[in-house]
Each structure stands twice: as structure tokens, then as C-alpha cells.
Amino acid sequence: MSDISPPDALAASVARELYARDLAAQHLGIAVQHCGAGSAVLTMTVQESMLNGHGSCHGGFIFSLADTAFAYACNSGNELTVAQHCSIDYLRPARAGELLTASAQQRERRPRSGVYDVSVRGQDGGLIALFRGLARSRPGQTVIDHQEP
Image (cartoon, rainbow, N blue to C red; front, top):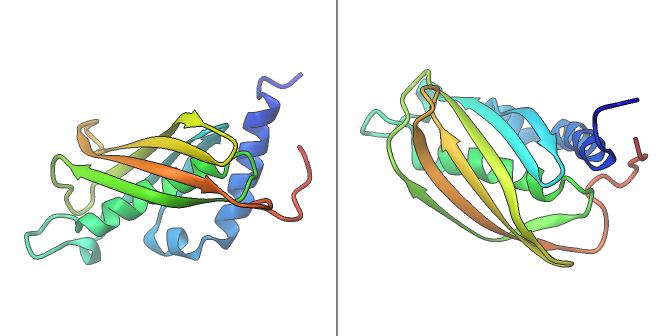
């Protein structure tokens, strides 16, 4: 008997299939560490090419990491879901070589919308940014030919 619940198994399966098509995440070096029902944990190492004129990670890359974690969390049920609104608060800079971890968690889910919070932390565990996303479901599935686990 497996210790993984059916919704978590579905989420992990959808994440694998979604990542295979997610060229942006692959290009940025974003890796999926975990995806469960309504949650996701992704990582990204800050590259030299991601630094801004102040020598810290450009906020757009931090946003991209958080937005990607949000996407995996809100699509974890294999319901086609897109971002309707997102905001981010930057709390401290990230530096070259630093491993960032974005942890997304569903806060509220309704039939066609959901609210998700994402924390982005540095490798020392310090909070770098807080992101909130409002998701909107559309007709269809994230992974069209998905087979239940």
C-alpha cells in the first residue's frame, strides 16, 4: 500500500508531464522538488546572467520562480488553470550562486478560482519574497492525455 494519497499522486504525475513542456522553467534552471495537491516546491540557482545593475538577482527572475511554483500548485489537480492576478513583495536581495526555494500553498479554492501564497527563501532559510496569486480555471485539463495513477 502506498503512503501517497491519490490527489498527491495525481499532482506529481501532472507536474512531470507539465515540466516536460515547460521550456521557460527548464531554460531558467528551475527544478520541481515536490508537487502535491494544491502545493509545490521548486528551486532555482541564481546565475551570473540573472544579476541586475546592483549585483543582485533581478526581481523578474525571482518573480518567475514564484510564478512557476504558483502554476504547478494551481494545476496540480489537472484542471487547466491560469494566473488572473499576481503580486510580489521583495524583502531582501538574492546573490549569484544562491539556491532559491519557492514554496507554493493553496489558501482557498472555489470551482473557478483559487488563492495561492508562495514564499521564496534563500539557501540560509531567510525570506527573500512573498508572492500571492489568484488563479482562474478554464475548461479542460492541464495534461490532456493524462491517465489516472
